[in-house]
Length: 241
Image (tube, rainbow, N blue to C red; front, side):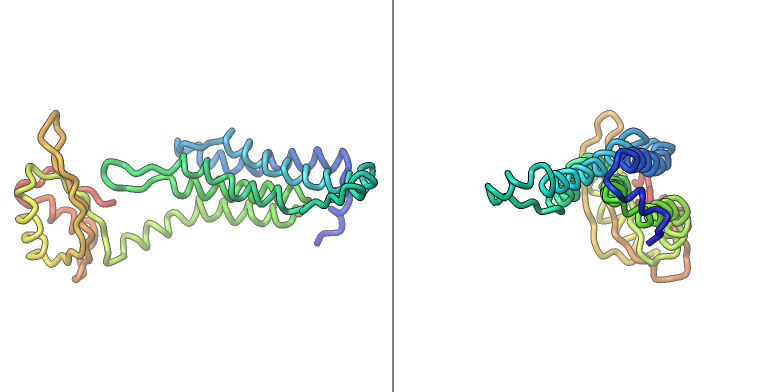
Protein backbone atom coordinates (compact mmCIF):
# COMPACT_ATOMS: atom_id res chain seq x y z
CA UNK A 1 0.00 0.00 0.00
CA UNK A 2 1.21 3.53 -0.79
CA UNK A 3 1.50 5.44 2.49
CA UNK A 4 1.29 8.82 0.76
CA UNK A 5 -2.34 8.05 -0.04
CA UNK A 6 -3.27 7.29 3.57
CA UNK A 7 -4.80 10.77 4.19
CA UNK A 8 -7.16 10.10 1.28
CA UNK A 9 -8.29 6.85 2.87
CA UNK A 10 -9.56 8.67 5.93
CA UNK A 11 -13.26 9.45 6.09
CA UNK A 12 -13.17 13.21 5.51
CA UNK A 13 -14.65 15.76 3.11
CA UNK A 14 -11.41 15.92 1.10
CA UNK A 15 -11.31 12.16 0.79
CA UNK A 16 -14.99 12.09 -0.16
CA UNK A 17 -14.51 14.57 -3.01
CA UNK A 18 -11.39 12.79 -4.23
CA UNK A 19 -13.12 9.41 -4.34
CA UNK A 20 -16.12 10.66 -6.28
CA UNK A 21 -13.99 12.57 -8.78
CA UNK A 22 -11.72 9.56 -9.26
CA UNK A 23 -14.76 7.35 -9.82
CA UNK A 24 -15.99 9.84 -12.42
CA UNK A 25 -12.62 9.75 -14.22
CA UNK A 26 -12.30 5.96 -14.16
CA UNK A 27 -15.84 5.39 -15.35
CA UNK A 28 -15.43 8.06 -18.03
CA UNK A 29 -12.26 6.45 -19.39
CA UNK A 30 -14.09 3.18 -19.96
CA UNK A 31 -17.12 4.98 -21.33
CA UNK A 32 -15.09 6.88 -23.90
CA UNK A 33 -13.65 3.66 -25.30
CA UNK A 34 -17.10 2.10 -25.59
CA UNK A 35 -18.74 5.29 -26.81
CA UNK A 36 -16.37 5.80 -29.73
CA UNK A 37 -17.60 2.46 -31.09
CA UNK A 38 -21.24 3.64 -30.87
CA UNK A 39 -22.13 0.90 -28.39
CA UNK A 40 -25.33 1.05 -26.27
CA UNK A 41 -23.63 2.01 -22.98
CA UNK A 42 -21.36 5.00 -23.45
CA UNK A 43 -19.57 7.83 -21.68
CA UNK A 44 -22.30 9.02 -19.30
CA UNK A 45 -23.59 5.53 -18.51
CA UNK A 46 -20.21 4.35 -17.30
CA UNK A 47 -19.67 7.50 -15.25
CA UNK A 48 -23.02 7.10 -13.49
CA UNK A 49 -22.43 3.38 -12.83
CA UNK A 50 -18.96 3.96 -11.39
CA UNK A 51 -20.12 6.95 -9.34
CA UNK A 52 -23.10 5.02 -8.01
CA UNK A 53 -20.92 2.12 -6.93
CA UNK A 54 -18.44 4.45 -5.22
CA UNK A 55 -21.30 6.26 -3.49
CA UNK A 56 -22.67 2.94 -2.23
CA UNK A 57 -19.34 2.02 -0.67
CA UNK A 58 -18.99 5.50 0.87
CA UNK A 59 -22.49 5.14 2.29
CA UNK A 60 -21.53 1.81 3.88
CA UNK A 61 -18.52 3.47 5.52
CA UNK A 62 -20.63 6.42 6.66
CA UNK A 63 -23.21 4.18 8.34
CA UNK A 64 -20.42 2.22 10.02
CA UNK A 65 -18.81 5.41 11.35
CA UNK A 66 -22.17 6.64 12.64
CA UNK A 67 -22.89 3.36 14.38
CA UNK A 68 -19.52 3.54 16.09
CA UNK A 69 -20.02 7.21 17.03
CA UNK A 70 -23.23 9.27 17.33
CA UNK A 71 -25.53 6.28 16.87
CA UNK A 72 -23.56 3.91 19.12
CA UNK A 73 -25.94 4.02 22.10
CA UNK A 74 -29.05 3.50 19.97
CA UNK A 75 -27.40 0.69 18.04
CA UNK A 76 -26.35 -1.03 21.29
CA UNK A 77 -29.84 -0.64 22.73
CA UNK A 78 -31.47 -2.29 19.74
CA UNK A 79 -28.62 -4.74 19.18
CA UNK A 80 -28.19 -3.42 15.65
CA UNK A 81 -25.17 -4.57 13.66
CA UNK A 82 -24.09 -3.65 10.16
CA UNK A 83 -22.53 -5.95 7.60
CA UNK A 84 -20.08 -3.57 5.91
CA UNK A 85 -20.04 -5.57 2.67
CA UNK A 86 -23.81 -5.99 2.30
CA UNK A 87 -24.48 -2.84 0.26
CA UNK A 88 -21.48 -3.41 -2.01
CA UNK A 89 -22.56 -7.01 -2.62
CA UNK A 90 -25.94 -5.75 -3.80
CA UNK A 91 -24.18 -3.47 -6.31
CA UNK A 92 -22.28 -6.38 -7.85
CA UNK A 93 -25.43 -8.46 -8.27
CA UNK A 94 -27.78 -5.58 -9.06
CA UNK A 95 -25.71 -4.22 -11.94
CA UNK A 96 -26.80 -7.30 -13.88
CA UNK A 97 -30.01 -5.63 -15.05
CA UNK A 98 -27.98 -3.00 -16.92
CA UNK A 99 -25.65 -5.59 -18.40
CA UNK A 100 -28.56 -7.73 -19.57
CA UNK A 101 -30.02 -4.73 -21.36
CA UNK A 102 -26.91 -4.33 -23.52
CA UNK A 103 -26.83 -7.97 -24.70
CA UNK A 104 -28.80 -8.70 -27.85
CA UNK A 105 -29.10 -11.59 -30.28
CA UNK A 106 -29.26 -10.39 -33.86
CA UNK A 107 -31.36 -11.85 -36.65
CA UNK A 108 -28.25 -13.69 -37.75
CA UNK A 109 -28.00 -15.54 -34.40
CA UNK A 110 -25.02 -13.38 -33.44
CA UNK A 111 -24.65 -12.33 -29.81
CA UNK A 112 -23.58 -8.72 -29.29
CA UNK A 113 -23.00 -6.64 -26.19
CA UNK A 114 -21.19 -9.15 -23.97
CA UNK A 115 -18.05 -7.01 -23.72
CA UNK A 116 -20.11 -3.91 -22.96
CA UNK A 117 -22.00 -5.77 -20.22
CA UNK A 118 -18.74 -7.07 -18.74
CA UNK A 119 -17.27 -3.56 -18.76
CA UNK A 120 -20.33 -2.19 -16.96
CA UNK A 121 -19.91 -4.82 -14.26
CA UNK A 122 -16.16 -4.11 -14.01
CA UNK A 123 -16.89 -0.38 -13.83
CA UNK A 124 -19.17 -0.96 -10.85
CA UNK A 125 -16.53 -3.10 -9.10
CA UNK A 126 -13.93 -0.43 -9.81
CA UNK A 127 -16.24 2.16 -8.28
CA UNK A 128 -16.47 0.04 -5.13
CA UNK A 129 -12.68 -0.05 -4.92
CA UNK A 130 -12.50 3.74 -5.26
CA UNK A 131 -15.30 4.20 -2.76
CA UNK A 132 -13.53 2.24 -0.05
CA UNK A 133 -10.21 4.03 -0.69
CA UNK A 134 -8.40 1.17 -2.38
CA UNK A 135 -6.92 3.51 -5.02
CA UNK A 136 -4.03 1.26 -6.03
CA UNK A 137 -6.47 -1.48 -7.03
CA UNK A 138 -8.62 0.95 -9.03
CA UNK A 139 -5.57 2.38 -10.83
CA UNK A 140 -4.22 -1.03 -11.82
CA UNK A 141 -7.70 -2.23 -12.82
CA UNK A 142 -8.44 0.69 -15.15
CA UNK A 143 -5.12 0.20 -16.94
CA UNK A 144 -5.62 -3.54 -17.41
CA UNK A 145 -9.26 -3.16 -18.50
CA UNK A 146 -8.41 -0.53 -21.12
CA UNK A 147 -5.51 -2.61 -22.42
CA UNK A 148 -7.83 -5.61 -22.69
CA UNK A 149 -10.71 -3.94 -24.51
CA UNK A 150 -8.67 -1.69 -26.77
CA UNK A 151 -5.33 -3.34 -27.56
CA UNK A 152 -6.12 -7.05 -27.22
CA UNK A 153 -9.00 -6.84 -29.72
CA UNK A 154 -6.56 -7.24 -32.62
CA UNK A 155 -4.96 -10.25 -30.98
CA UNK A 156 -8.41 -11.80 -30.51
CA UNK A 157 -9.30 -11.25 -34.17
CA UNK A 158 -6.00 -12.79 -35.26
CA UNK A 159 -6.55 -15.87 -33.09
CA UNK A 160 -10.11 -16.30 -34.37
CA UNK A 161 -8.99 -16.05 -38.00
CA UNK A 162 -6.44 -18.80 -37.43
CA UNK A 163 -8.90 -21.04 -35.62
CA UNK A 164 -10.02 -24.17 -37.51
CA UNK A 165 -13.57 -23.59 -36.26
CA UNK A 166 -15.80 -20.97 -37.86
CA UNK A 167 -19.49 -20.08 -37.85
CA UNK A 168 -20.89 -19.30 -41.30
CA UNK A 169 -24.17 -17.45 -41.77
CA UNK A 170 -25.81 -18.30 -45.08
CA UNK A 171 -28.97 -16.98 -46.74
CA UNK A 172 -30.43 -19.09 -49.53
CA UNK A 173 -33.38 -19.04 -51.91
CA UNK A 174 -35.47 -21.81 -50.30
CA UNK A 175 -35.34 -24.44 -47.58
CA UNK A 176 -35.03 -27.13 -50.23
CA UNK A 177 -31.52 -25.81 -50.94
CA UNK A 178 -30.19 -26.72 -47.47
CA UNK A 179 -29.39 -30.32 -48.38
CA UNK A 180 -27.54 -29.24 -51.52
CA UNK A 181 -25.56 -26.62 -49.60
CA UNK A 182 -24.51 -29.13 -46.93
CA UNK A 183 -23.46 -31.65 -49.58
CA UNK A 184 -21.42 -29.10 -51.51
CA UNK A 185 -19.73 -27.81 -48.34
CA UNK A 186 -18.67 -31.34 -47.43
CA UNK A 187 -17.27 -31.84 -50.93
CA UNK A 188 -15.20 -28.70 -50.37
CA UNK A 189 -13.58 -30.29 -47.33
CA UNK A 190 -15.62 -28.35 -44.78
CA UNK A 191 -16.63 -30.42 -41.77
CA UNK A 192 -20.11 -29.46 -40.46
CA UNK A 193 -20.95 -30.45 -36.89
CA UNK A 194 -24.14 -28.44 -36.37
CA UNK A 195 -26.69 -26.43 -38.36
CA UNK A 196 -29.11 -23.87 -36.93
CA UNK A 197 -31.83 -23.18 -39.50
CA UNK A 198 -33.98 -20.04 -39.37
CA UNK A 199 -37.09 -20.71 -41.41
CA UNK A 200 -38.41 -17.85 -43.45
CA UNK A 201 -40.26 -17.07 -46.63
CA UNK A 202 -39.43 -14.94 -49.60
CA UNK A 203 -41.02 -11.64 -48.68
CA UNK A 204 -39.56 -8.21 -49.29
CA UNK A 205 -36.05 -9.59 -49.60
CA UNK A 206 -36.26 -11.88 -46.54
CA UNK A 207 -34.87 -15.33 -47.28
CA UNK A 208 -34.46 -18.50 -45.19
CA UNK A 209 -31.09 -18.63 -43.47
CA UNK A 210 -28.91 -20.92 -41.42
CA UNK A 211 -25.81 -20.80 -39.30
CA UNK A 212 -23.35 -23.56 -40.11
CA UNK A 213 -20.94 -24.48 -37.31
CA UNK A 214 -17.96 -25.84 -39.20
CA UNK A 215 -14.38 -26.98 -38.89
CA UNK A 216 -11.69 -26.45 -41.51
CA UNK A 217 -9.73 -29.65 -42.09
CA UNK A 218 -7.12 -28.26 -44.49
CA UNK A 219 -4.84 -25.21 -44.73
CA UNK A 220 -7.34 -22.82 -46.31
CA UNK A 221 -8.06 -19.48 -44.64
CA UNK A 222 -11.46 -18.28 -43.46
CA UNK A 223 -11.68 -15.89 -46.41
CA UNK A 224 -11.08 -18.70 -48.87
CA UNK A 225 -13.78 -20.81 -47.22
CA UNK A 226 -16.23 -17.91 -47.42
CA UNK A 227 -15.43 -17.42 -51.10
CA UNK A 228 -16.00 -21.12 -51.79
CA UNK A 229 -19.36 -21.21 -50.00
CA UNK A 230 -20.54 -18.11 -51.89
CA UNK A 231 -20.17 -20.01 -55.20
CA UNK A 232 -22.68 -22.70 -54.18
CA UNK A 233 -25.91 -22.64 -56.17
CA UNK A 234 -28.94 -21.00 -54.48
CA UNK A 235 -26.72 -19.21 -51.94
CA UNK A 236 -27.49 -15.48 -51.68
CA UNK A 237 -25.48 -14.15 -48.72
CA UNK A 238 -22.47 -15.51 -46.81
CA UNK A 239 -21.10 -13.97 -43.64
CA UNK A 240 -18.76 -15.16 -40.90
CA UNK A 241 -20.06 -14.74 -37.36
